[in-house]
Amino acid sequence: MAETNIQSAENEALYLSKTEDILEKYKHGRGSLIPILQTIQTAYGYLPEKVVDFVSERLNISVNEIIGVATFYAQFHMRPRGRHIIKACSGTACHVKGAKQIIEKLGKKLDIPVGETTKDTMFTLEEVACLGACSLAPVIMVDEDVYGQLSHNTVGNIIDEIKG
Image 1 (cartoon, rainbow, N blue to C red):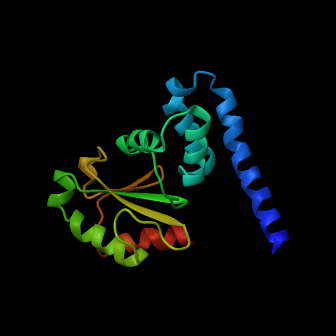
Image 2 (cartoon, helix red, strand yellow):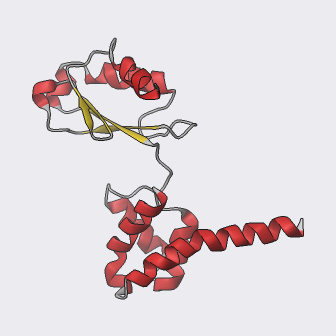
């Protein structure tokens, strides 16, 4: 049991050392909170609770203030996200051409609701107001790839293709 606690403490120290390195790069502390959070998110893929607590202690900023900043900006994520981010457009052009059915089909295919990540952390499904590809409506974006003129009958093929 004691050995497990030692390993756990060592793992946490190693885990937080990445955050320590990030904080060392930003000498302005409080005034650099957003770039610090951006760099942390790049390193971890999201803003882990332990890391937010550590940043709070180091910068003498309350956890609530950090979470307030992180939740104000859509770029920050407080939970792990999938390796592939699926953004399904629900803007006017996509809505008119069946976006709702496409989003429902994606949710069923992935077995998750919008805003969640699959158990295997392969996919995160997000609904967005517009992807700026109205001429291709309805449209989804997987990572940086845009898929347009979709139907609820064909959208599942994209997931199968990515799973390979």
